[in-house]
Image 1 (tube, one colour):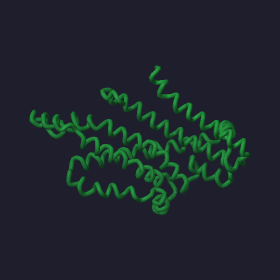
Image 2 (cartoon, one colour):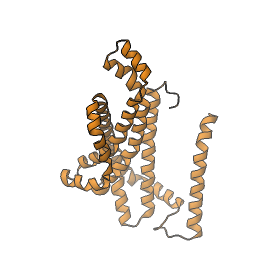
Image 3 (cartoon, rainbow, N blue to C red):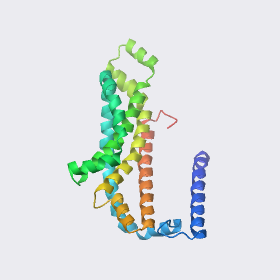
Image 4 (cartoon, rainbow, N blue to C red):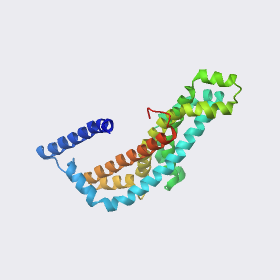
Length: 251
């Protein structure tokens, strides 16, 4: 309990100190609310506007979960295919890296033109930002398998499938979950980007609407919701990891 508290209180104190400095700066320099609202004003708006924001939050969460599951699945399938077939890894891995050099915000308008303004282009955006960290992390974990144990299993007559399921995959799980945690945070960002381009609901749509009305306090509330959704996704992945990898004490 003491160890848990010692790791929690430093960031909590840092955040509280930052908020106090922010509040004091707004009051001392008399900054206009539409430029930089005080934390108290943002908190008040979060409470009063919670009912109207709830539906937007649910829409973004639904979109995030769908895109995250699809993107993670594709990332795992790609990593396994490249790991099992070395020729594919040699041929496609550089293209996998190059695919991330195109900004997602630049692809989103094209996806809207090709697939319309429904859910599909938004799911594709989330998939594009999620599959890469999962694929790279899984490939790295599979490549770091203990070669001594692999040689021992091969000498013992283990098949390739047995080596994969009993050695390579369990050994790679911590790396895989590291990539999934990164993808979890990216999925929320991808959902918001998709909603920026074209949507009639969601946190991204809500942000664009409030920006047009110069409601900076509501924009900050939307940012707070995005942060909380990202933390929730990471927490769920961490809890799942601890249940699946009980032997990994560091996790």
